[in-house]
Picture 1 (cartoon, rainbow, N blue to C red):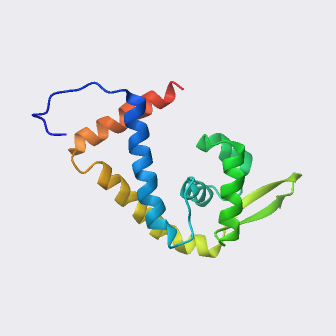
Picture 2 (cartoon, rainbow, N blue to C red):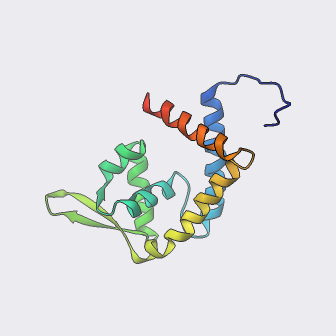
Length: 144
């Protein structure tokens, strides 16, 4: 935003939604050639890479997706060869999700796309403005 522009109050939810949709489109286009589709699949893959052995239930809770979206994304990531399900030895009805060697190899590529996406979103902000934005969004998130 140009500092000379006049401030125009817009609904915060609309702004956040617009930014989210724009980022999703960018990541879907960028990751499509790797077999990672839309619907936040990259979020699930990133979470499994960060916490191998997590369950679908934990993913649903931590990422704030509904159970159907989690199940669909996990299935697609498994079919694409990025994750594998292993029966939970403590609960035979549950599966633990692990990244495959393909996912581990892909992880730096995924991180570059995520970093690039963040850089595009914040390119017009100073370092201090970016820090403040993150702090404010984290503060809002804690209230829900």
